[in-house]
Length: 244
Image (tube, rainbow, N blue to C red):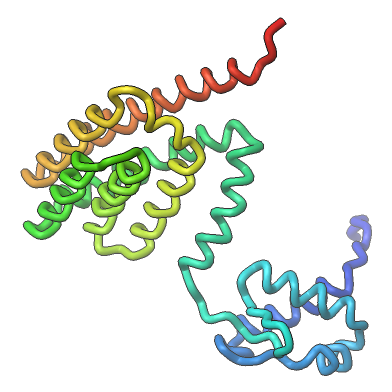
């Protein structure tokens, strides 16, 4: 016989779970309006606070859309919106948990090495020209903001060669989290010229369909970049420590 205590659940959690079940079963489809608050209260035998809390929870999770003065409706699936929500949590983690930045850099290395190997294996002439265009725009960037934009575009273009839309969106998300969290890194003297040189090496390897060289070039590129992040982090931490 189980001796685990019985956990009393909030009414709002029960309402939320029942609505989630209806959405997942297809009883409520994307774009459908949910019953009114009063109808939900009557259907489930709960008060308005429980219904509103459940609806807000579903809205926060991206499952429903709430518009003032209208009944809530089931959200139409949108990968970009989902990644935006994850991004808000990621920014918070980056600001409060030092280990998260290290984990993000490690995940980026694993991801981008995989992407560049695929790119080297299947890149077309149009793909190569697109990458060359990104590097050329980086070279002609007039300020840091423009350089960052073109830097991100270059790495996203490599991911796009895979033909996998989820990989492309993951690339965009990771770069956005990383570059916007430590934008100061790209102002380090000489950093732009080194980055351009390494991007040119990557383009050359991809154009030659040299998977091994593309992999090594990406590892070298991101390892150096991660080392610069480490130096910057150390400098910022020392700067934040008050003098004795």
